[in-house]
Length: 555
Image (cartoon, rainbow, N blue to C red; front, side, top):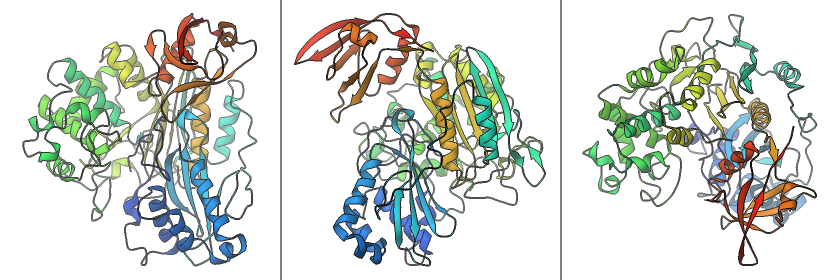
């Protein structure tokens, strides 16, 4: 699969969409009748519906899938309260994985907003039955009232001093992949870990070539921005300009809707009858037909939901406008100018000693690796189906940041500061990277399966937090209310914030003259890294006050 997180569907109800993390979920894997599926698949099917808040309520889940002995022992009302608490605990998180573990367990992994620590909900089945004997958050409470310890909870914080030691330890625990880290403009770590090809005894190296999940969305985004800058395309162009057979409900959908997650299109294009949801070959016309035939989640421009299908249409528009194939266009205008000679598409020849084999939940073919998956299908063209290396990804980030292809404003649109971008699939490949100009990280793995996913996510988050750690401090903690207001929840004694007169319950109105909201908060905060004084307008007791605060340098 080629999925990118932070735009996933609701988890036990509405969520605040503020993260940018990898997702992995393919409901069609369990699309058979629940009565025909084995117990684990039945339970995963039920969890899917519970998490999507679709046809299965929490009460139905308890009645149908929680073991009667547990309900009898604890009481139905208590079990329902605990299940509700579990759902509430991940209400603002993004689903990153739903998969079987071993023969009698299931796991649902969630990535946290703002790049914080994620969580995992695990379920233990009654042997041979699609019934939950217990369900719990790792390190937290369960349906049976027990508290399950998190084996990774006591790990020391990742620092620049213990970076090498931590990565060596992660490799001993099973991590396989490549890591590249830049600090203050210099590469300080560039290594491979574990095996690229276990059967051939080939180790991962800095030049190992991996599948990169949904990262090609960034390439498609850049390609469209380039055409817009050249005057060949406009955000306001309706898609009916390019697809004459666009149905009535989609004729006024614009390029801007596609690129701003406002199209209303479903996420993916695969059908339950497809042999493989990513690799089965379909051409551009068939992919466009499927996208245009989808039932919309909401009218264009009247909602927000990430859609791979939308980006697939953008890739098709790139071909139509440029007169070049998508692979030719991105190679000519993006990869070659950036020096990205190891970035390409599925099915292309790669020396066996450099091609990473995937060790994930799913496998495709005798050798589970991109060179053997056939050419990139339009099921994922422009949103997946590509390969790269940590070195090429560094070239890409620097190429964009240095103005090699986009204007400064477009570069900021593509790479907002202070966020982590990610992509992954179910075949074992995951990538996470940051894009700040001087201190950044890139991690790619080829053995992320159901059990290792949480470990990979934890390592990736630790690396993101390390390179994105602020160099200055205001001394405040912020909260986002349901209304979207940004409120100061804590002010540290002796901090610059206290000295400037900021107080708990102050509502942030603007910073440096820019209105503050949940969408731009992270980018505004990263602008403070320069350490210069900034004017902050707050609302206190219905009156606005303007304060000047100077961040304090920190190690």
